[in-house]
Length: 116
Image (tube, rainbow, N blue to C red; front, side, top):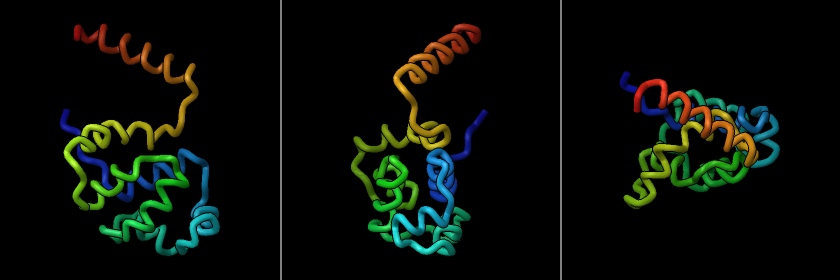
């Protein structure tokens, strides 16, 4: 199965939802307007300013480099490895150490069933 690359809007929306924040709450915290945020999450804005991306990534606790790359901005080659794994973190939010350990055990179990 080929997985489509996550868009910037999908990445930001998943990160926001992972933090249980509304668009209005993000607007209050970042001074980025609610309509702009909605257009950004809907992929109507493809390359927001790096400053706005930085504010959002700081608030959401996600990789700024990942957001830059998804927006089409150049990032160093060594940063691309982190971007590939950022999608899961944005979708499920931050994990406790116990949750991370449990998730890793579950992935190992799934892989062992496939014969990997």
